[in-house]
Structure formats: structure tokens, C-alpha cells
Length: 537
Image 1 (cartoon, rainbow, N blue to C red):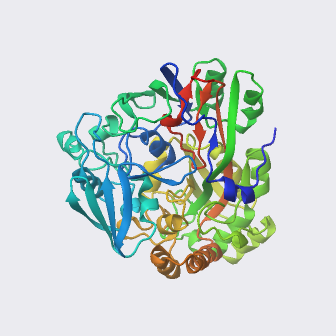
Image 2 (image 1 turned 135 degrees about the vertical axis):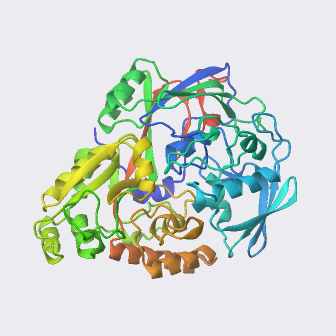
Image 3 (image 1 turned 120 degrees about the vertical axis):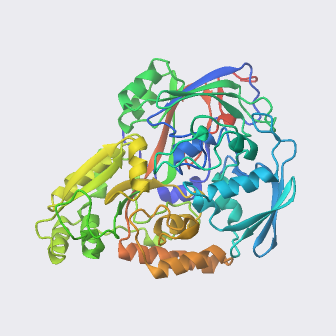
């Protein structure tokens, strides 16, 4: 069964939830919910790793000031309202009566502490707070966030910055984030104390993590009957599917594309599918003088645009779509998906697949026989990542490039690439703000202070892109802003700063009596999830 979807239509649909929840449903009885993913959340620290599964899982325990609704719209969370009081000042009124899971009251001091922690050494979420100059306490339930420059999208950007308890972190010696690059752990990696609808009960890394309902949660209108959650990482796709088919788990994701039809045909199961806002791409080291795991000594071929273009034109993206993804992807020429604010649709045209031209470019660059290069790829993050890397390796072999593929677990993959200990890598990115400024700032701008270029792991650099990224951040006129976004994306595209591949379809599988909301950013909130019969069904 081939799954086809158009991301032209997804420009409208991408920000709308695929939902199987009846709004306002009340649980008939409390339930245990068991679900599985191919990978694990690597830490319980919400500032330690800016990765979708981790942020998704922890969003059930911790909360931001500003959250997202079922259509990815901004909604009040730990802040009840916000407004701009000056070009660089935002007033946030904080929710009263909220307590952390240990009973400690939530106040402005926790927000200020979480800001300093998120921008500190070891944090992987600096990009969310990089525009903030300082936070001023007005009183226990009001703050002013002061930005370095006018920053009209601040509420969008901080929607994944989660708030921690100052007292708990100090008492548990967890004032600094867990640093996955250096392998530094602390209490926050294994324990948690948030304000969210679920509490951490037990953490067994790579085995299971158990949550229980927080019945003191401030929002009494949440739509769940779940009292206990058991999350299990199951790396093997066949084992994961078998666990669902046998009833051992209630839900799994991602669903291997080859198993979607079989699961959908099962009368006891169902599959939720929809377009995703994540873009899968390849990055290349453009700063080191010598590549890792390469036979080219004292040289870095990726510094030559002709080599980067040769790699681009050697990749048959239509074959990857047909064979590896079985139709469940949409090839892209950009680092953002339709549905992301500022998406320049006219630039979304890939250069043609042309291995002969690629070989000629390599010869012109001085590599007529090709060269060797190491490639880092996760094998437990997204569906088919390793298969994509294998396909790319085989395609590059046809133009004389030998890829030394290192497919590995996120537990070792992320420390390597986040330390820039990589020459060639595969990664996926969903802009946390759902705005083009996010990938420009985090992925394409020259690495610098305040989280700029924090995930530009190949150190691509173009001063004009940096200049435009700063201008886009402060521009309030939509037309001018979109023109600048287009210009920056075009420069990066012409430079071949990265190799964008595709956006892929989401596929979650579950028992028929599980009801949840599928968001286009691949987040699943337990507060919108029910198991079993509900009143009125």
C-alpha cells in the first residue's frame, strides 16, 4: 500500500490536528495506557536535548509559559496572558494557584531561574531564549521579558521552553542542565518535578518510564481517563508491531511504512496518518580542514560548492520516496515544510538527479576518483532513517564516493553530532515556533552566541544569511518579512548549505478504543488521550 499526500494541501492542513477525541469527553473509568516508540527519551531534563521525542514526552510533565492547542495555535499555559508594553518588552501574567509536583508554589522566581538555566552551559534549548536579554520580576505572578531587539514572535519561540522549579533544582544539585555532549548527568536526568498533568513515578533508561496522573493539576478540563502511563522503547520495528498486534501495548509510533496496510486492516486496530512539519536533511562539515573517517588527508572536499552540488545531484530522491518511504514522503528543495510561516513555495524545486553531472563536478573539484567520508545516522529516531542513509550511501558510491556509515542509537549519535564530531550526517528539524526564523537562526546562521547556529553542525556560514536572519527577527511587516525569508532561503539554497531531502508522513497505530490528537509536529499530549469507553459513547 502506497501512502500519498500533497504538501501543497498540507500548507493548510499541517497546522491542523488529526483528531479522534470528542471534545469535553469525560472518562468513564481510569485506565493504564501503554505505548511504545522506536527510541527513548534520553533524559528527564527539559533543557538537555532539543529533540522531538524528548520534548514531546516531557511536555506531559513540564510546561511552558505559552502552549499550543489542537490546531497548533498559541494558548495560555503557565502564563494566563501576555502583551507587548514596549518594542523590546513583553509583560507576562503568570497563573496563580499552580504548584509543582512536590507541592512547591510556582512563581516568577522559577521562570527567571529556568531562563538562566536554559541559556547556561550544557543547555540544548538556547535557541528558544537566545533573543531574551533579561527577565524582570514585577511580583510573584508577573514578569517582564526584555528582548535584545524588537522580537514580535517571542511567544511563538518560547512555546517549547519548559519551566523548572528553582527550589527543587537547588535542593537536588540540578541547577545546570544535563550536558549530553559531555556525558554529564545529574538528578534531573532521572527525576522530574514539573507542573504538568502527569508526574514521573519511575525511570529505567532504555527499558521503561512510568508516569502517573497529577490530580492537583491546575487545568480541571483536560480530557483524559489515564491514571498510569507506561512508556517502552522498542527499537526493532517487527517487535514493536508484534507488541501492538498481541495487545501488549495500546499504541505505537512510528509505524513502519510496510506495515501500515496490515495494521489498518485489523478490526481491533486503527492508524492515524497526516503530513508532518519535520524536514529530513543531510548536513556537511564546511569548517574542518580535514574530514573524519576519510582518505583525503589535509583537505575538506565539502568546502567546495561543486562537491556539495555533486552530492545533491547524485541523490535520487524519487527513488527514496518510492522504494524506501513507499510513497509516504514529499521531496523538498527547502529546509522548511509547507505550513511553516514564510514558506517560499516558488523555491521548492529540486535540482535534477544527474549522476553524470555529479561525477563531472567531482572531477572539476579535484576528486575524479571520489573520496571516502564518514556518515553519522540515527537508527532509533525517525522511521526509516537508517534505510535512507543506506540508500544515500549506495547512490554516492555510484559517483565514486565511499560512505563509511555509522548508524547508531540516539544515545551515542547525539553526543557526537552536537559536539560537531561529524563530517556528514542526517538530521530532521521541526521549527518549534512554526516560523521560518527558527531554522534560519538555529540551522543556517553562523554559529555564535545566544544559541545562534546551535544546530548548524557543519558550520555553514554566509554573512548575508546572518544579516537577513537578524532583520527577519525584528521585521513586523509581513510582506517585507516574507521577502527577506525568501532571499535568505535562496542564498542558502544556491550555496547548497545543506542537502534537504523530504518531509515524511506521520503514522501512529493504536487500539480502536484509544482516542488521541495527532499534531503535525508529531507531539502527542496525554491530556487529550483516553483509553476505553467514555461516557456518551
